[in-house]
Image (tube, rainbow, N blue to C red):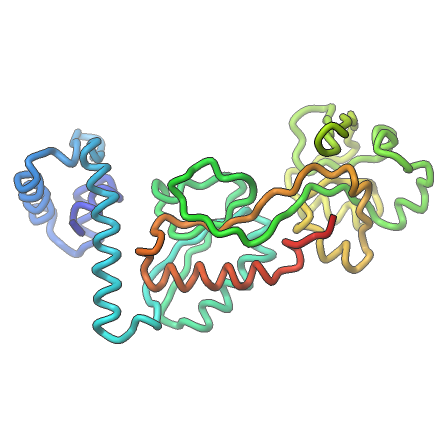
Length: 296
């Protein structure tokens, strides 16, 4: 099973052999013996790639679970169940990961010196299974019901500006006034941008024309802090600036519904000690984070 999982994940007999410190012929013989035992092909081989068949994909899920349970049994028998060890990979959105996940990971590594973590910070939904990720932090609704998800809080899209900018624009009293303001856009998709505001039946659309467009949320925050204009970001990105008064939240009654934040992983109750430990650390760290509990 271990050899099959390595070949399926690496999509290469040679890469699996290197990973397992085995010879390529030994890996080939092991897979042939497995297929003979099962009576089905679990891998499709061409000159360019190796892929799991449909039967192989089903077997892969079971093999991963069984191997994880075996590892857990080994840990319990060796008396190290409470001492996670080995390599972990975790993913999160870029700015959220930098601001709120990395402190948890650093504390986790300090607590468990025999664990190593690879942090993959990307502003896209990462497929944990396909990309070899153990644990993820996901913002937004979860369409994939195969994931084990633990809610840790929620965030909102908020409109904000500095007190200095607002002092110079007293006419900003209702959402429609945003169309005539200096706008900082953090993710432009077209010259004209529509901001959908409100909840339920109380919704309005404001067309804004950004004077400054950036592809980096941190840069938009800095421009807003300098008093250049108004920006719209996720609440966790500006939570400390709102709390300190450096930025002011505008029209909170028109903010769309909150987006949930979850810790996700694949293994469920069969998770290894290291995955459980990291999940528990993230749940504890993020549930206590004020940035994930912004008020209405």
